[in-house]
Amino acid sequence: MDLERKYMTEGDGKVIGVKGQVVEVKFRKNVPEIHDVLEVVDKPGLNLEVFSSSGVDTFYCFSLGSTNEIHRGSYVINTEKQISFPVGNHLLGRAVSVFGTPLDGGEKLNSKEFVAIHKRLDLEEDIVSHREILETGIKVVDLFAPLMKGGKMGLFGGAGVGKTMLLTEILHNIVGKKEKNVSVFAGVGERSREGLELYQALSESGTLSKSTLIFGPMGENPAVRFLSAFSAVTLAEYYRDRLKNDVLFFIDNAFRFAQAGNELSTLMNIIPSEDGYQATLESEMASFHERLVSNKNAVISTVEAIYVPADDLLDHAVQAIFPYLESLIVLSRNVYQEGKLPAVDILASASTALEPGIVSNMHYDVTLKAKNLLKREQALERIVSLVGESEISKDDRTAYRRAKKLRNFMTQRFFVAEGQKGQKGDYVPLKTTVEDTKNIIEGKYDRVPEEEFLYIGGVKEINIS
Image (tube, rainbow, N blue to C red; front, side, top):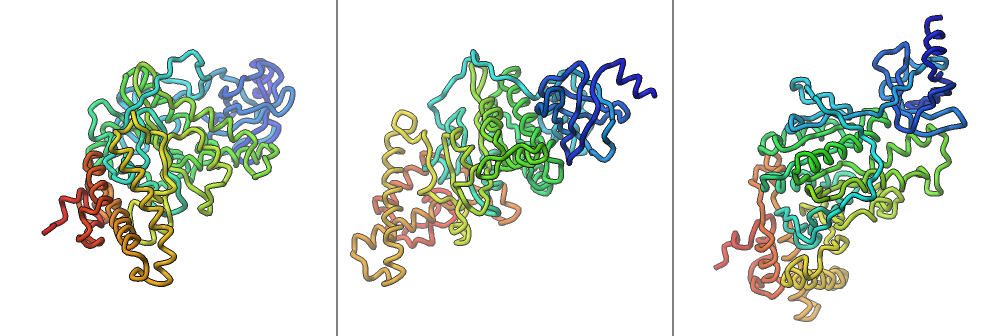
């Protein structure tokens, strides 16, 4: 009776269906707006977020906790507020959940300021574009697919080819080198073990104090995984606009963000598109990516790990991310199986930053010549496998060997893998990478065996007699 009286007097809604993490609610008055938070009357602390309408006065809502205690007939109250995330300097060095709850065993956050995680795009906001390269110290990235300051880079690859390791190395190298940089890491739908390893790697390298990690791991329900990306981008905007810090934003994994949206879409009986993904996939990607921009206050540069199901780059969820990226790094299972790390498919990787005026003329020319050399090697590979290297012409043999040396030169020891490999990582300046690549292409090291170029920093490490 008390519940009935509370429902009638406070006027909100009643649960009419529960399906997985999606709860359908019917409202009599005080109809909510999209993203409003609803409180379940008889279960304090159990909240719902309104996602979309399902009828004239009914709405689909995400449950932000377990739905075991929600049943048809449960009453809800509209708080008329969105989910808010705690912001402030004190989040640097911390690992938290989508709601700002500490996950690192540290003390509770005493936050005085909270910001709603959803926002409409401000079409009048002054967006600033930059024509400057953000050096990562990773040879194959800086040379063939450089990251633009304020740009977005995608690391594409199937399971177990080194996406997370490459992303973590980029985080380590850039955040550790620049004083004003901070980083925000969004762990969306990935394993808790990988999150722990990242936390430990950043702690050991001394860059954790300039980073915030926000996790919605694989074991969480799809609503939490989906929302974790928005909590992370909200904090990145705060660091950019209020603290005026240049932000390096990481998400691992952008595909899992799309996958979580697809799971929720299925529970809401939304008719999928022909490829099986949710019809709202493009708009969901836009609502996330279009907030990761630079303005007059500071810069947000983004690096995304993107899982490629069955190594198929034509998968629709993967294709939905492409339009937002300036730099594409494609990781290859074949290269990985050869034992070459990072396992980058050089000819499939590219960047809009590779043009004169953004990179130096020497960098541009060397990259074009290097790609042409690698294409020539690819064409010769089948012939060599059939008849042997000795049967091709002298010019072809020279080009083939130089290409092999170049591929080996693009391997590198990583700081974040020191514990696994027992070797010290290398940070290779872009200038060194360009000059060494130029010398390899021009034949300066023709007498040096190709094995000598594996896992070195600069060519100066080779003892050339």
